[in-house]
Image (cartoon, rainbow, N blue to C red; front, side):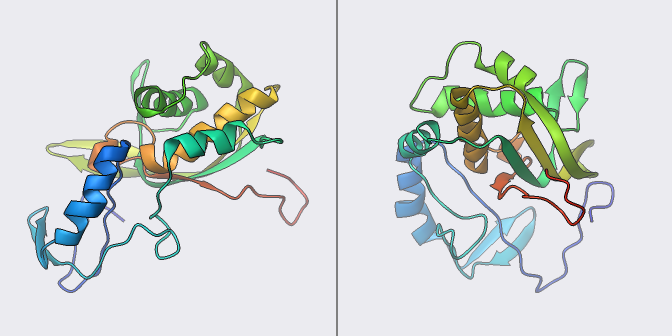
Amino acid sequence: MPKRGRVSVAPGCPAWFRITTLEADLSARVEGDWLPRLPSIVAIGGLRWRVVGWTTDAREHAWAGRADAQTLAETRLLAPSPPDRWRLEFFTPTAFRGEAGHLPLPVPGALIGSWLRRWETFGPIAMPVGLLDRLRSGVAVSAFSLKSVPVRDARRLVIGCVGELTLRAVGLSPGQRAAMDLLAAYAFWAGSGHHTTQGMGMTRLRPAWSGNRDGTAY
């Protein structure tokens, strides 16, 4: 657990870090040119690390994987029965720029808005006009398990949250649920909130809970 936004690393401690790209040409350059040429020793954050391997295969690491954006869109948007619940994991501290400033909670409007902005910039298929307003009013929080975590940003301490959040559709049409499903899946690469290029907001869509021991569904 970070203390005042810092984590101590002991010599010999294993670690991994993740790189994502949202453009096909850049992805090809990373996988074809950059990763195979990684040196045996790299310096990150003032520490020297020995490189022991890398992968883009989801079967080898839970946070690895690749997807063609066009195929992802077609698969999610053309699904015959789009889901009505989305269980999300925030693996690194996640925060947003809200109307009143810094927002350390993934409220639906801020969360979906961050995904949609990235999709509109990099995605191959345009989303309907007014989609954000419709999803903001048609998605509600049904369960969460979150905690705040500090992140040191130069001299500033930023508060984010990690954990899980489940969203459910409230009166959305099948097409709107499909669009929501695409954005939630896209978050695996795009991240959530701000400072994603600095490692914040790592997000993935998890299998939805079917229920718990007392029969309550999420």
